[in-house]
Image 1: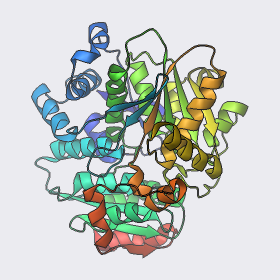
Image 2: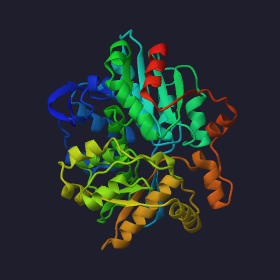
Image 3: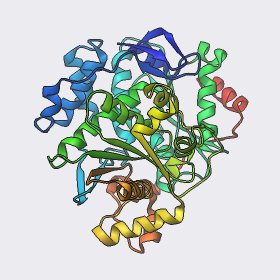
Image 4: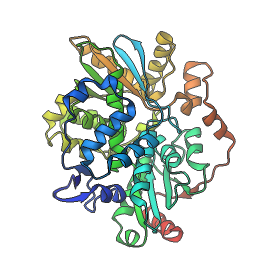
Length: 434
């Protein structure tokens, strides 16, 4: 398997280099040289394959022998050892629950897979690896859990001060050991910019072996494609088209869905559901991509004003606006609309959905209202509603059950380094600590 940068298709790197480097020198994003189609026989018989079988088949065709089959199976079985169930709300509305992993968020799939991949490639290397990750909510907790106590690897998680939920923050700041949290006085975009600047700083990269765990890392993105196949196999077998509605911030999750479609999954349409940070829906309407500072919302993990994975989407769609519009629809909603959707879902189905999933429900409903035929719509529920406990309980006017592994975090001591959003301070801290 070879990968190129979205900014330069003339030079290639190996999978190992792309995984460890995270970001190309030209500040593009790594993409596979080829995204092969899975065998028709496999696609037609998804129902007979386990979640782990699906992951193995996807990776085997993508990696093209880079990792031996036995090692690849071990990586997948160690990483993907929890389910991704589909819950039926009604005959046209299904919820793909992606919160059954250790940190109760969909990021567990990518983080655990990447941890296994890096551990595999890192065997025999005596130089410490420092992983940098920016988070708007769930990524940091998943990466921290995925790499916790991994030998030879240190993790630095940057998060925006006051812009993640209380329990999300506890997931980032209470582990210790090889995990360090940086509380940044700024937005998620500031955190993401600090990570990117660090990778492009020759002084740092000369002296510190850096890698990334954001969805800019291809090892995070690939396993997210697995659960689109896993969801599809759980839907009723009929001729209705399947639509996936993806609550979107940095657009890694949706990009993984596009990978799945390229590999042969018969998805009729993808829907990008966003909050007030409506950069991609605006692009779909106007043809102009205009990043802007993110604004805080109830669905905070989607508070991204310059989605990194837009470059990968642009690459997949052949850099044309018409191609974008054909496969992707985009909708944006306010916090008040989100709250109303949460109450409506609970009233109609007795199902507690988190703010991000509620934005997905709104987008699916709007799409369905305009559709001329019956469809099977799948909304990705990306995090357990208990991770947003005060807001969810306030909105629904009722207590929400909190999983034990989340409840026990409440009393743990927060440990975080406070820094400004300027790169100079972050560079100085990195140089002093690694």
